[in-house]
Length: 367
Image (cartoon, rainbow, N blue to C red; front, side, top):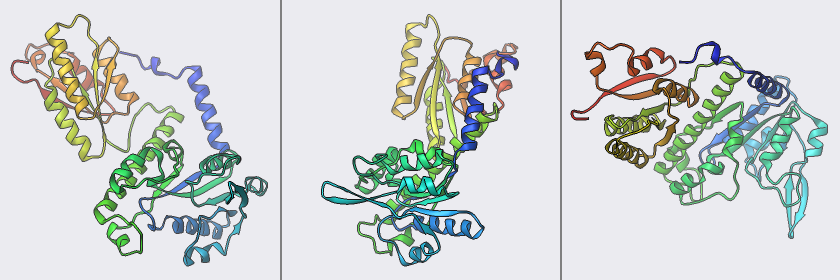
């Protein structure tokens, strides 16, 4: 196995960490209020957060207001300096876009931007508003913004499955993952049903959207944690969600492990990964058995990974650390222990496992 010295960062890794730290220090901070449906109150929460910061003495301005505002938001807006939008005409229509030049000149500490999922008209400085936000952040201006889960690009298929509708504008999930803070604006689905809403989904669908938003926020927290660990050179791999790794061999009781892993991943809203280490000169019957195991894994929607041939324990440990695994499922016959053989692969893996739990599954008779 690799020695502790082998795990020290090389010069390129150290440079990457320094550059990442410098970029974070220069860059403004991003906070996102994430809603799971219209009228959940995300815009009010965003402007109210800005009001409280202004009362604490921070320099806060409004960079964008989305459409018509409710009386309670209008009341909060009256206490802010609002940077008027620029009106651009395209194809016979007027579009309001953020005045980026004015915001750069003004350079506030914090800028409030409603309607993150907004497409700028052709010919604008940036095609989409989230790209405007990126520019503000890169210039050291912190941004507080709001968006609904229906506008997150990678979640739109799932939202469409739930609501039978698809939002026209979108924001990439990768942008959300860069947030320093994300807050789900939570409200019981039942509370939204009574609010006038054309096409408001029923409570069951609202509950599904709410769960989707909560899981998305957990993914962002997981990304933030990993960024912190990487920037501080911390080798431990913790995560906000369960990440279950099923290790397959031709002899493992694959179906038992895979079904159990699938149930646990589903229960804890985690991820199911499957890995096998390539072996030289597998017998045809063993190869066929392994292919059958992998077929089951794919049917269950697991991420399947083939690891290069090498020491089984080293390969699994390295992969588990890279993927921030929280649980490892492993088949074991117990034969080595009964024969008094120490330091078998399972024992070695248990001894070396610091950042994840190991669950053993006995091989079935005849396997």
